[in-house]
Length: 386
Image (cartoon, rainbow, N blue to C red; front, side):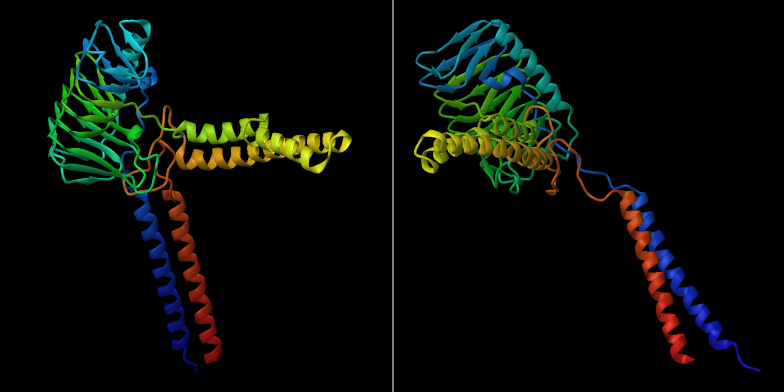
């Protein structure tokens, strides 16, 4: 009687291999069933009409010395603005008018927006000597800055840095905020729970939104804004430059898509330039006037305009809009950033990556592949043995 042992062993081997593959697939599925908490994603704070102001106060604005304000200056509901001259405002001064009132309303909305964003990390004490990645940073009480704070965007020009300071913000003399690897002043926001004091000869970056007052001491500069909700802004021989993002957030998606698409399509940049250049150049070069010139000009202009408009509009609109929109666009009011760690996302969007379902399916497919390979190997061995 012929022994059945080899066949039984082979069947056991197949069973073990199948069980191992199935275990692997189920393990992968099990890991994906428990979602990993995502990092909070900071979104550029929408400033509304307050974005046009370099200095805005609730009670008064007082200046000493030849300060230069690059942007609008306003106060509301207070009315007092003193020290201009000798200070210079390269913008419009709004004292208790409708524009300043609306800016204060929008500042309150912006302040609450910054305060309400989910935190990435807690901070405390002095920020000097630290290098921070894009994120939302929360301090329960006061924050100081002595020396240099470096904000590293990791190559993302839409990276957003938000600081939620519980009480006061105070910088020491000659301290500075340094932006590296594409970080932009327009995407740095400081929500201050009481008052801010910028030390003498400090170089500060970002939009300060203080609940009470802001004091910018002698020789300090701000690449951003000094916006105080309820109290005063006090200046002394300072330079404050309002910063805006050229493209970012919705602008990157809309501008790249709409501008390149619409502008190109309607004959602005892509269509218009190509149309004008195609028409003018082709008209001039292609013909010496008359029919040839007109035709070449019309054709060159129309074709180049239409093509550039169509292509520029569709391609740049689709590509620029989609790519810039996906890579850099999406949130109202300005640029945004990927989550901490540098995952590319849309502005204000969540991190894009394989979902738990996709990873589960992938794990199952890997398991089934291993089972198939196992059967194939065992059958080959069986065939050789027989």
